Image 1 (cartoon, rainbow, N blue to C red):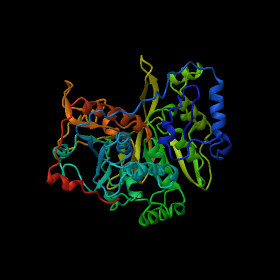
Image 2: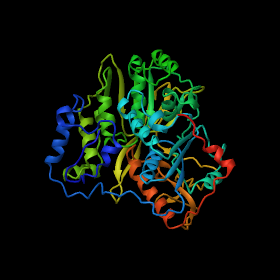
Image 3: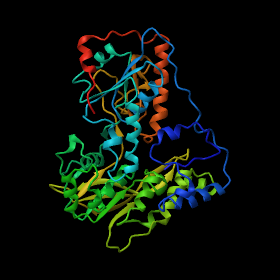
Image 4: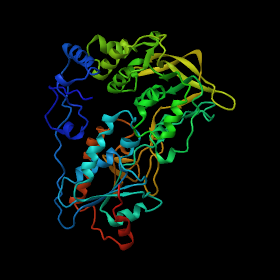
Length: 479
């Protein structure tokens, strides 16, 4: 979903090219599920608000002016950040882009990380197909950097290498019992039900009546919905038959989606939550006594300065009923709970939580403070969705603390003193950390490509000589 603020919009058209999923629609074509946003947005803009800064300044495409040798770039990864970088490069005539991915299918999380019943979101692959059909673009699938070909070999045959490998590792849950069978990551579970080849062997115990998901971002809501939706609605999607069979045989009746902080800090987006509320056959409930607002949010609400997204979330959450007695499967949103222990002997049997309360520091930042009270929840499956971090690549610097490739605006840094690695660039989550959404990668890629082209034009990137042994890797592989 995209809301366009007419006072901030600069008519740049970027949202149209980056959104092939019919998110921009006239009022007359809104669906029944979208109609509540007419009221939400109307109420928001009735309130007097301070002038906001320009949100989308127009950035002209970088121009390749050096004509000694056509620019050739290798991009490692084929997800949204990689494809936007390729698109930005291919705006210039004569540029060649080779995209490498270790998987046999392209587009990363846009293909394998989106819920199978989110058909609109999956349509973004249509845009990527258009990008890959441009002259000068070649896919090299099933090629793993560091194993099949090295960073140094890529630089021998390309003026630059752009790493767009995302943040593929989950942040670890470091509490006792986290290694028990039945505790896994939500990311692995998503990969399993999406048919990721690395996860086809996994099996999940769905025999207990309750599952717990720790974390309340979009991935957590996706997983909760897949665990409670009628499995017949997944037939004909990308979900493998063995997964549909497992979901048909599942005994799960209730999924708890647990957040450590308050409702105003919910990590999910408004469209994701609105989509969950409109899913038939699933009850969504919340404990009203956990609808606590921190002092900072309360002050912003009183002065009409509450960010639009937070205001929308709170309005939707207030419409959610408390725990009900329906026969439908149920998703329960829980807040102010922090896991302290996974319970069980040989397998997961439940979770122990600290009850939390909210406070703010001197700068207004929201803090979650343990009260000393405990709460125990029975469960047979615990999935964690508490964030992601990048993984180091052979031959490329890596900031282990932040989980990213160190960089300055996309230029890879060798060390903290600001020394750059010639010909090495980065974009997407491996550049900035796990923040933003599919479209966020467009502006991120623009910044990186602008610096890359500047370096090419001023001669920082030298000429290349494609050696025969490297050229073999340049044969296009079929998608």
